[in-house]
Image 1 (cartoon, helix red, strand yellow):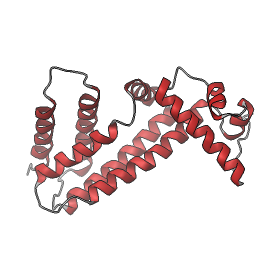
Image 2: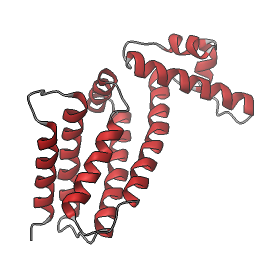
Image 3: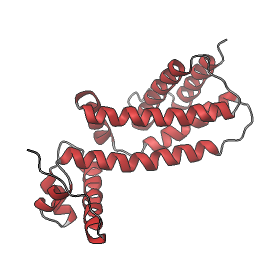
Image 4: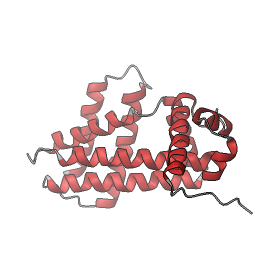
Amino acid sequence: MDKEVREPKQKRSIEKKERILSAAQNLFMEKGYFDMTTVEIAKAAGLSTGTVYAYFKDKKDILLECLSNNGSVYINQITDELSKFPQDKNLFNTIKNILKIFIQLHTTYPKKYHDELMSLVYTDEDIMKYFKHMKTVLMNAVLTQLKNSGIKLIHEKEQSFLMYSLIENIEDELVFHINPELNKDVLLDECTRVIVAMLQEK
């Protein structure tokens, strides 16, 4: 039988949980997910390991809450920036600006942590569900911006899926410099052209 975790209601309990999440986030960024333990999180938070387990089932439970908190901030930043775009009907500029926003915010995670998260997407159902949710929310924000710019997608689900796939790949390349021989400015423009060409198909 799984041990029931506590949902903090009092100020002191809430602060303890926040200390755990803050310590965990710092360790995830510094060491990645796999190379650190719940014991290390407790030590960094200045709490006992038992206290950590009073609020979280395990390390993955802590990770999911960290991701959820970060995701909420990320989504708010994306949607806020998208809402600022001028309604100039310039599809190339709109798509390029969207790409730039995703790329800028993609710098949040160090490469090791990023790569470990991506491996978890393929091996852990809960992590997979979280990232699918993020993808849906972010693409809905992008689609709303495109519609506000007067752009109508013919096959909305399929085109948004392809667009997000391109965005994911361009993010990784431009942030982590996987292929240093590539010209990053040209790559950004060419990715933008591919998406624009797809959206302008009749």
